[in-house]
Image (cartoon, rainbow, N blue to C red; front, side, top):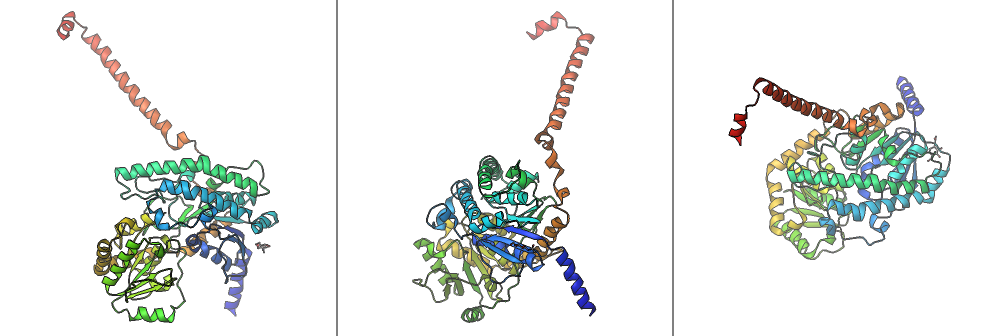
Length: 521
Ligand SMILES: *[C@@H]1O[C@H](CO)[C@@H](O)[C@H](O)[C@H]1NC(C)=O
């Protein structure tokens, strides 16, 4: 009875604090959705009224979870092109990737999502929201919804550290040790690494602030009705964001300073799976007494698009491994498939990574898969293709639970060597287990951490006191340049003054004799 009353009281407290939350995550890349989906679902499970703008429909969800669907248009379709062979993007520089794909694709997808009739209907209705949460990924126009509803804004990234957000909230950039999230540099702290980082960060911030945000503001004005004049800039709106949730954790990513309202929730998408493997697969994996190798390049990168000679290299390596290999191969046939290789068009990744016989994961180094492998303490051989993948694999190689294989280095010898090394050198497995343990060693799990801080900013009306006071300062005061210039001035003037005084004393004490002058000349 007491328990029942307690439960009722608990329910009522939750209920009375239930907020009306708008969760705008329209970006159509599946890995992004997978990363952030648990946040919306969990908020609804806790009794909040969640309205989510998304391209991916959930069939099972709490009753207070309302879905507003946008079309699942892929970024290349939004750009009016065909799906490219993703392997062809491997040589794109970070700048080119932005110029050709992210900037134009971000604008096209934002416009597409905003003009969706269901979204327009919501914006025209008189529903009010207490909080707007959006993904920080090339869709800034959506942040204006926080301004429209006069609600705090929370952001979430699917990757870790976000340079743009650091820059505008005056969180330390730490360019010497923290590479920009989408920049690939082999040795971030070397001179060249730091130079590249400075160059790319400057490029990104300049184009973003002076060009991209302007374009997003045009979309904002065109599609979001009811914005009170004078409408602040999107730079200003994001600067006033109450919270930023980043998908990283210092135990496995870089250790860097964060303001109190930038919170690490690395691994937020990971939940223990209750699903079982399909029967046939379960049997194969159970029977793999020497362990098995799991190969999957994620949802964007397709193995069938591998060039022939690289595909042959894969097949020869797998044959030589002489143990079970499970490969996500997106076609019905695979010629010359060795007997020890099992292929499937789709594989239940969570369950496979949790199987006790797994020995290594050959992947593209996407953050989701990397964190899932880490969760289970599985070493990785990573072949990065684009985006943040290079940095993810570089980090895990430096930590010692995997190896980086450059796409252009995929040859039988090189690949066999690396896989064999990771399979047979116990240290990779041991390190993977150790890093896995410390990834989970936290006061609160990732999802609860996200919930705590989201509810915190609701409770505290956006908690503006968490922002850095540096935001109030002019650029000159913030950089301390005025003080440095003053000190420089004092030092230089005292040197000049001292020299002058010495000269005067000198002339007073020993007046020049004509004789000396002669000697010198
Ligand atoms: C929950 O959100 C929907 C919009 O998706 C709105 O129509 C409804 O009135 C909200 N419910 C409450 C109790 O605020």
